[in-house]
Length: 219
Image (spheres, rainbow, N blue to C red):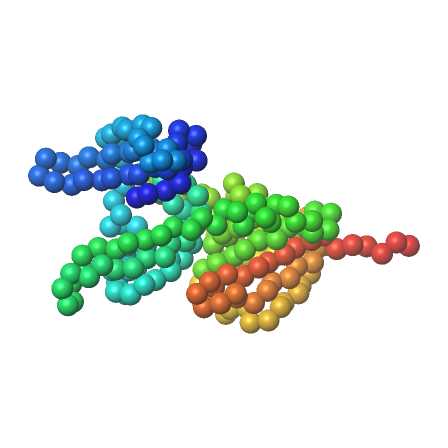
């Protein structure tokens, strides 16, 4: 894996996992702008196996170039999607897969800067109910039973107003929103308005959802 680095050691980082007759090694190499080595270590505690990751499994199953659903990246712990393609071995064989990660954390950063009324918020919700962007980016990640990170579903996210407004979007079999759908609701004695937008596309089945306190008319 090659990535632009964010830990301040150097600009780029490479991870190389080797499985051979002598066992498994995980090698981390940080490189400067001119690609000279700034740091080189081995990480015996690393247990990453790409063959268990969504981008590899989907490319292997469909044997074509695919986009994954959003998920939490193993190394950076950031939300993102992956464009992945299978690598053939012979006419019908599968040798492996190559993936390119695209972080989507900047969407949450953008939402946090939006002014929607006094206390309104905008979210992006996947068609499976996962909240993939929220003004408070810390809310979208939660831990699975096996200790791995996953997206919080709209029915469990620690935003009680969003749960009331959009909780039905988290149920399997729920029909997709095909047109802008406004609504209003009451939470904790206060009245709110909400709007859910249609799914962006087949490739990006994401819904933009917005809620805000209802403004009362002056008497």
